[in-house]
Length: 221
Image (cartoon, rainbow, N blue to C red; front, side, top):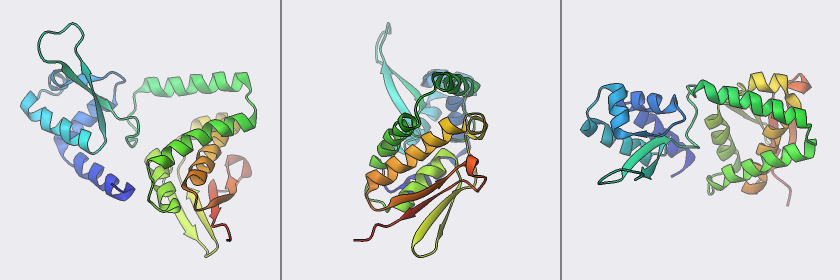
């Protein structure tokens, strides 16, 4: 499934009020929930909830695990939001606290810039692997959109610029620009290198007092 088709399938899945309510319930916690627990929270019957859970699993919004610990009979399925599901801005507050604490720890340890970029690069390569077959710019635009950057693409015929019209990590980026912006830079460089069609020619961050953006070019052969 192409990135565009996947996004369309996700939007269709969440257009149903019941599925959206289930997704919000699961996205608001870090704990995997059983079908019955979801039913109890939302006041729904299991026969109503099961097909909705399966539909969201099919489009990649949810992941399911099997829990047979200490139970009698059929193992219990437990659902949680998939790791690569798009953000809807409803992550549990504990994630924001954890992100801040991890940033504090990382800043205290004062890693070298090259190491920070390298960590981002690995994540970028992994994200690109999931988008094999799509054009580099389209795939990167899609990946950034899923992360919440609201990218805007411009092309002057020789260089493609992707502006980040929103930064989902703005608070952390303003507090720790060297850490957060270099992780983002590494992510993009790793993504582009893995796709193999373009090269990053410029990357602008908050420190540049310019709209944050990346510029890509196709290498001459």
